[in-house]
Amino acid sequence: MNVAVLGASNKPERYSNQAVKQLAGNGHAVFPVHPALESIDGFQAFKQLEDIPEPIHTLTMYVGPERSSALADAILGLRPQRVIFNPGSENPELAGQLQAEGIDVLQACTLVLLRTGQFVPG
Image (cartoon, rainbow, N blue to C red; front, side, top):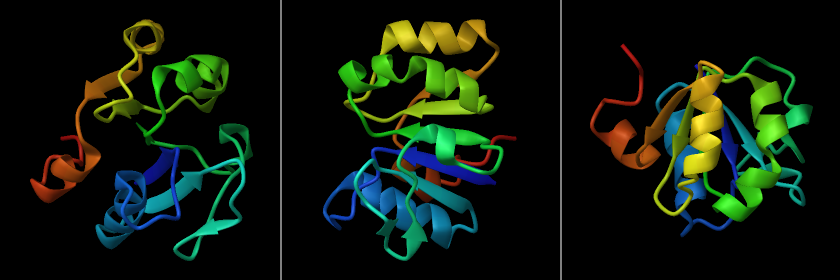
């Protein structure tokens, strides 16, 4: 499954960095998004969502609502099947826009979903 990580970090203590590693470790194709990094833990980083060359199933959010609101058009343009708002990234207005476009929205922790076997929809 193709998964974009918005707000990915190269700092190992950050949850977004741990998500990149755990997603890859669970067999997912990972597309980290960070405007200033070339790569994160050996994965090519993309400066913006529009740069991702593949269809994305899941977008997992690690940016706050002030940043994600500004990216609403790019997120809608990406057309993910699902967006996960991790703790601290909740954005009810954006979530409503996504749901109105038929995109599944979860308020959940990607790391917990992975560890408990609930990440893959089914």
